[in-house]
Length: 228
Length: 235
Image (cartoon, rainbow over all chains, first blue to last red; front, side):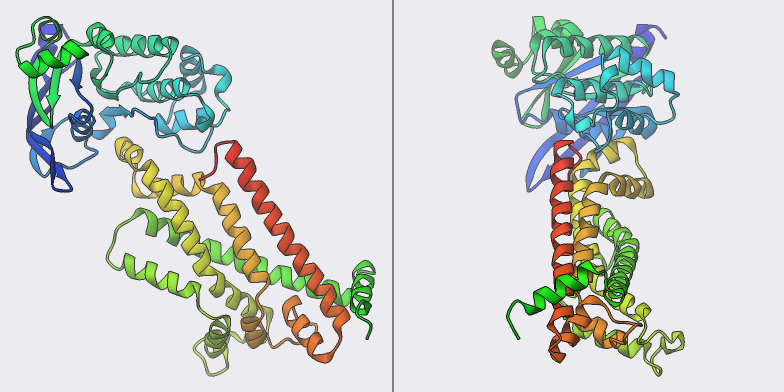
């Protein structure tokens, strides 16, 4: 599928989505269309609603208002900012995330992530970078159509960041649509094709990445980028 | 009687592996281990269901099982006695004054412990795992299977807690077992009987065995918790 054609297809669409908890409006009338085969970066200050938007699009929370249309559950994956690690070995955890793979495929993924020697280590004993890499390969191994990444490289070292970014790029090339959040401007500029900028639970600006970073349209985005 | 005499008799009985003493210890262990196995078999799935599913009456079951935690053993003994006595609904089984009735009483006593403790463990895990389960679209039964597997270490310590409670039970088992020599006499009921007869030697010997078991259960529980916490497998 060409880039042009893929951009015309929506992978996930949200219409007038609002979500509140404890009498607080956390997502306010969100309407968004995520184009197929692109990397969409959700940016904004802490508490802007980025993670909540990803959770809503992925179906982890049920908004009180609005509709979300996306691919089937089996076709989408999410990697959490802090991976939820089961109490079992790294390999067993990987197989839980992506069941049904043969032994050599599993070995290949672990080698690729340089986690080969850690296959039998309890997942919860892996370092932050290792567990994030494990969660990512567990999501990618099933070749999802849609992948949500919530700050996948927060607090990681350069090596882990490099691996995760290379896998994100590779997944995008094979047609996976990626929606992610990041607090790292350089990373956002490296990876993003589209940007959704949020503030106080609202989408303030949506644009192509180049346009957003070079000439943001709203004052909120300009202020954000000044300190980003 | 000299103060140390019961201790001397006790150690002599233990070191000579007195056949009657050994039979009592064996029967106690068999009954309590059976009761623990039954209570876990029934209690763990109930705990897992209560922790991971919402359904009408769930809160009532939680309140009931928590209430049963503090049910006096003699009341349990009385209920089981009524149930299995000749005119009771389970009278046809003919298990009154047999080890089966004693195991049943101990099962009923430790069942609330296995439900309450396992529910807590499963609830903690379920809260932690829920976003992952939802993200992966994990179904109800695989969810329960995952919770039980990942709580396996905690479940061992729950089993030890249940065993500690079961093996030390006296009130209920004496009522439904009858404390019949060579049939339904276990460590706790023998201690009660022999003490009332002034035969402190055998009572002391069994007391030492019970204390040793309690000590071993605690040491095992501590060891398992510490070892698996280090391995990141604790809950």
